Length: 337
Ligand code: GLA
Image (tube, rainbow, N blue to C red; front, side, top):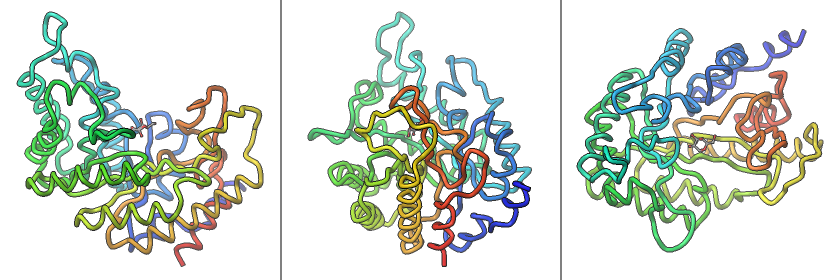
């Protein structure tokens, strides 16, 4: 009977077929537990962790592609696209990448050579099957005057580690669309830094084709005006925009309460309003926005359980823990009309 209900509602990816792809981040578990939901409503997949540096390249001479390959096979069987995530990041990257044989810092040439061979191997393996890559993730600083956040990539290789990553990715798969991806992308101060970074890459003819707006959003923040301004500013660079990690937390950042076993009615109503408004905006800018990926698929699994508050659940998606459509799903459908 539940299944019957699920099968009656329109398929999300069909509803937006003329605007953008609808994606979900998955992991080896959710590929099994959410299989029906994924294949019904989504036409693009992203690996939550399984294509990150630490997952595929734990030691210099050892690559581990089993989980990533399984995701690729699932996508192929079900006719889905794949967005690759992510080639260069300061997190989830093993220490060996930055070290020399005696445990000190590697030199610039060594680090860039390792970056090149990593990107060549990973993007090369999935050449032609991954249509877009997050090449560099989260390199921009959230606060202060500096554009780039401190990282080992920056310390050792200098600012042009970013341009190098894009060049290597383009060599490895000349047809893949290459993205710079970041969070707090709609916060004006950080937005302007992301804009400047991408502008300077474009001016230097670095092969970059898009900006990924992670879109980890909440019930109040960012405001619609700030989201709209971010979209317009990024689009003015003539690049494609992907929403790459969309979820709508029901808790404000400062909210630390852990007593809720289920979302309140107000939370679900407000979340539905927000989702409706977001998709109206995405539709309005669909000339620029070509993909909208959620960072998960349904409320039975989200990285926001236990983060940033341990022992707390969250309910950030359009489908509930039983994979049934929520009010948020209905208001996204309405936004499509
Ligand atoms: C960032 C990364 C993602 C993921 C989330 C948390 O947004 O880009 O890969 O790690 O954090 O799940």
